[in-house]
Image (cartoon, rainbow, N blue to C red; front, top):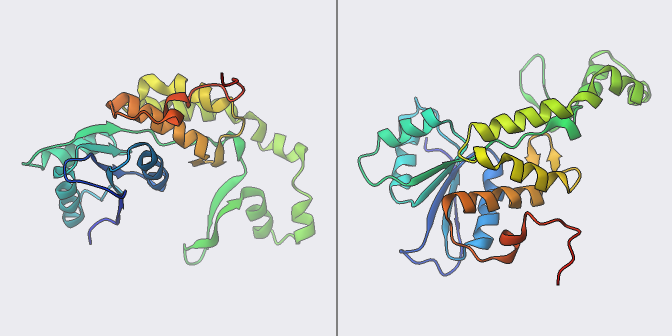
Length: 238
């Protein structure tokens, strides 16, 4: 089956206008929405990077890329080249974007699955402490009592900042935005908690990422929010 794709096409699109393909995790929807605001008329298609062994999905992606000007992907350099090498037609410019993950703000968040079926729980994100308490047959009252600063410290929850910074820096280093890590991190760090969950940034962080994508790929946008995204939120407007 072809990989799931969504055409995010703004009104007034014309054949000669910019065409972008985004293959990434769930962040692709937010990136597409932000870029659509800054690039009026652009045609943006989003999807997940297909399994290389799925030739149908891979060839479907190649067809889309043959008609694209720019490919934004969270895939590795090897995965990107494998897709492009199989194309005999025009190839788009490629920008590998980083996976935005930062666990320090939500160190207790985890995924949980049914031990018997392997199926994920109805609630996607769970508390590691709550899951442990459930497995130990704790009552709700006793489970709630586990959420203390003492236990957080014992579990190392207060010591996840450095490892989170390292993870994010490494993600940028593996992408085409390697030189932009400091610019991104210091901009979002000023906003306080810039993550919704450990793997999904808040809107301001998404906008900061998109600003860097535009700068790195040479996308022409004069949208003031794009230009000012790196500015301090406390800076007074003249």
